[in-house]
Image (cartoon, rainbow, N blue to C red):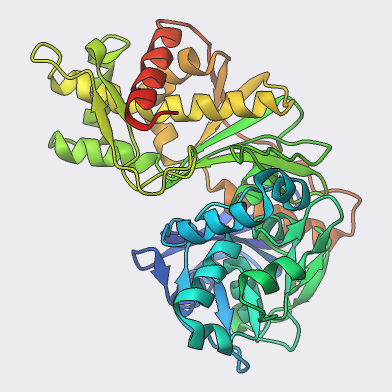
Length: 469
């Protein structure tokens, strides 16, 4: 039996056809998305159609079920005809930072964390809708439904039926949902939108069959509830208690499974739900793999060249510390920040040290995130390192010393799409839980200090000097 997992990410749509019995990928395809922090959702659907058609054509049989993992938080605001009132604002769009501050001032960080699991920052859907209400009131007046990116793609797959749906994982990233009760908090949405009350999607169980596909290549396939990309990645990795995933993609994400909801009044840890009925406390940064690619471009090399340069430098990069806030930052909450290179001297101004500082700076942000999860009670026995930047030899070599634990590096794979496929297989099977597919090719890089504490101390000092935190 074959199932289809879709990852509708910031940069592209990946479609994987998977054998539901063992999780083996038997066909795949990819289609790019436009750049930018606001995108017409029609572009996601066009990419999804192309990737699905190509993957289905390559598959050795009929696809029986499909599910979508999508980038979290994006604001898809629809009018009465089901058309977007404007381009979707993505998770990495920081223009709603003032509205986030207003929400916190109005309600208090502790109260919002207790109710929603979140302290609003510019990434979350509720702040984007508040921005829409304040800055584009005519568009806000036209809004009849609010969806998330994965909801939009799933709805298109089903031929845009009268009802819409989501799952508790992606719903928990909006800022108007309660992970504790499993219910929407429409009063928060209505307030943020200046008294307007859009319709919200039905929240389905993680193993639900939401509808049937109408797309010709997979017509009749069961459509799963779908979920957010981080929840799908956790499902694809099969995270167990004591596991912490560090995902180094466009953004950086650090997350771990939990049995109880979390509410961090500092806002560092987002108290998300996962895609199995449990919870997924998570820390997210806006800057991860692009820190390395931007530094490589500056040094006129590629990522492999950057890795070689970094490994040629000593730990601590000769005293250089990079605060890699190239796109602003979400954790810590510094939406208007820029990057800072501290400790620069004539002696340490070398390509090797700059490359090392870039890798260490990105990973120090992830190490801070792991500590934040520990502070909420998460057990950290090992780290699973995934994402594009996880393929870097320098990242793999430097991470254990900064994280303070052993690091496992699974074989590179599209874990969001695999998690979506696993959800589709679960929905189709009617089993009590998702299938237990093996994560292939994991190898361990043993934890070793090599100056990790000193590197992190220098990074913290640079942050304190530049931003006072």
